[in-house]
Image (cartoon, rainbow, N blue to C red; front, side, top):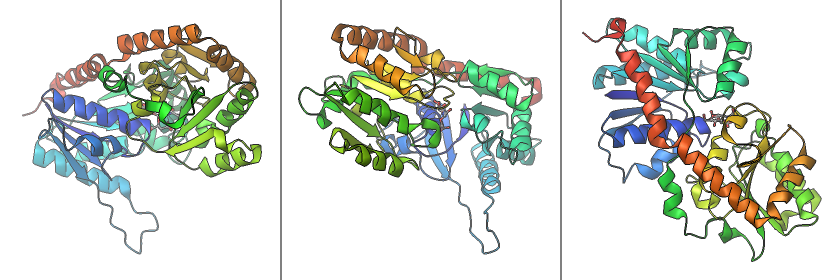
Length: 384
Ligand code: GMT
């Protein structure tokens, strides 16, 4: 199959899922064309050594003219989709994140007609819960979703939220985020998180893009409470707009020596291995890829019971889920696990087992393939 994949190239989950999917498809024989405005972070790491003459990257270039206070990225993206589709004879286009990728995809499909270019749209979360339902984007996002030939969402909760936000009855197939079980095995014997810790310190990790939706300040508040009677270190991985405020808060609390800000890291398993707990106190989270990555590295998760997180973290088995903003509750749950090595190990083992049995790359990539095949089997989308 020749598949075009359009995504954001940043450290955010949608770009990671799209890139890992592209790598998995190419590794099993498909020809994949990634379309984005920069080389996706995880692709940069793999491009040189992967099996892949079958993996191609096409950059969307957005010209800046003095007339354009707002350069029309959606048009440049649609143009690149058309070009790649025509010159590489794509069988289908799979766009990740509805805004504006679904709309650009519909436009590209109309331009290449009558040649069919089936369009699969994957909804990731903030494209529905924060951006797509903004009145400035609502109608075009609804149209992009409704016009797609197939739509997937990363959790049942996101499917529900999409129906609620857009009042649409478009069929939506739930295809969750996934992990490669091998990645943890490759680093399992390494020092991982322990590189940043003093002997005896228990290690808590948070990974995100430091946007307001992640409630990173709550991570610091939970950690502050734990510090009162535990020897702990906090590793903050990622970067984004909230980071300066969060660093300032650490200074005010006088706890900087116990917190390490690591910045963006492409391969998160290299820091998750050896950690004791993972904290994700998000306002909303359609799935929570970072939580799944922690579970797959045997790290129990303390998170908020919001969005799709209850579909990922099994409360009381692989982690604990608390109400949004309940920093005292999260600190108490974290303390229970930090003080009981056997329980932490049991949760870690259960998390790894559950992550591998429900969210392994082969299982989930097959679900995407099933979606592709069902679209390609439609007579109206048959190639001439
Ligand atoms: O987490 C983010 O803010 C980034 C965002 C993205 O689209 O890059 O992540 C969303 O997609 C991920 C992959 O499907 C999900 O695992 C995240 O839960 C989701 N983030 C939110 O819903 C806040």
